[in-house]
Length: 480
Image (cartoon, rainbow, N blue to C red; front, side, top):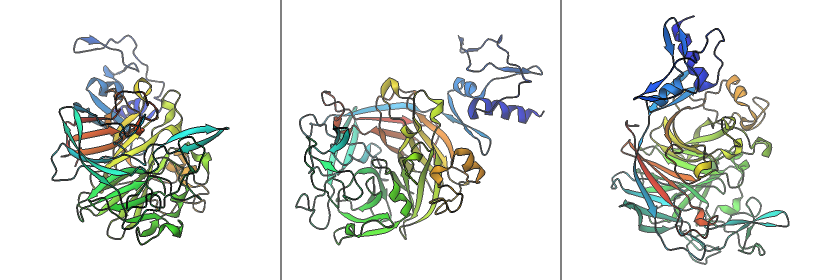
C-alpha cells in the first residue's frame, strides 16, 4: 500500500466519512499535547512503520485551520481561520409598537466607498403567521411599508444610517397611490394571500411589491440589482431607488409587464416551481460587470414538495450584456445527518458574494439561533470545473428524474461536477447569536462582513434591543 493512498484514506475517514481499512489499528495508548495542554482527538491516531498518522480534521483543529473534503477530486482543503475584528449593533427607533426597524436582508460594498460604508436592505416589511382554524395566514401589520435601500456606516460599535433610498416606479403604485411600492405579494394565482394584522381581512396585492433578499452593484452602469423572493425575480434599480426592469422566469403572468416596470421573461421556466418564501435569496455581480449570479434559498419544488429535503440548490449565471442565463450549477448543501435533530430542508443559502467569474462566497445556514445553532458557515466555492447543467435537468427527459429528485450518488453517477467548497468562516465557533445571517460582503479581498435580518423583531417584540448585529472578520489571506 502506498503512503499516498494511506494519507488519502485518513483524510477520507475524517473528512469524507469513508471507512479506513481495518488492517490499520488505532493506537489509543498514545497521549496528545498542544502548547502544553492535553487534548483528545476525535479519532485515535494510527501507527504504521514507526510513523503516527493523526486524523486530518484533528490536525487542522490543532493548527487553527478549517478542513473540507471534496469527494469528487479527493482533495482535502485547508483554510486559516479568520479573526473577529469588530461588532456593531443597530440603534434605531421602532417602526411601530412591537415592530423593530429592520435592515440586514442583504449587504453590498461599492468600490471606491470607505471600507466602513455599505448598502443594505430589509425584506418585504413586517409580516407574521397566524393560525386560523388550522390554516396559517400571512399577516402584514404595516401594509404600506416601502422596501428600502439603506446606506450605512460602521463606527464605534454602531450601525449608522447615512441615507434612505425607498424603492419606487416610474408610475403610480395601485396600493400606495404614489410612485412608492410596497412589500405585498404580486399575484393571487401564485403568492401567499395577504391578510391584515388580525388575520381576518384580505388586503391588496401589489404587482410591484418586492420581497427583497439580495442586493448587488454593477459598476458598469452604476445601478443596483435586487433578488426578489416572490417570482423569483431580479430587479434593476437606479441609485435613487427607481426600479428600471424586472427579469422573470418564462411563463410568468403578462400582467406584470407594464410600462412602469418592463419585464423580460429570460429565466428558466422551472424557477416558477420555487417554494414560497424560499425563492431568489442571493445575487452578485463580478467586479468587471460582465456576469450576474443568482442563488435559490432552497430546492425548487420540482416536481413537487416531496423534494424539499433535496441537498441540491441551483445557482444561475447570467450574461449582463443580454440579461440571459448562460450557465447553471448544482450546489450541494451540507448533510443534515451530521448534525443533531436538523432536517435537510432547514439548511439554506442566505446570501452570496461574487469574487470573480469562478469564485463565489456562499452563506449557508440552519434555522437555529444562539446555542442551538449548528450551521452558520461562509464557503468559498470554485466553479472552474463545475458542470453547466442549464436546461438539462428541469424535467425527467434526460435522467428520468429532475435535478431535485437526484440523490447525491445519482448526481455523481450522472457525471455532474458540483462546485468545490472551502470553509472561510464558521460563525458558530464565534457564537454569532442570530439565526439569519442574510448579508455578506468582502472588502479588499480580506475583510469579511456579515449581518443578520432581524425580521423586524416579530418573533421577539418585547426585546429592548433592535436585534441587528453586524460583525467584521479579518482573513489571514486574500480572496481574489
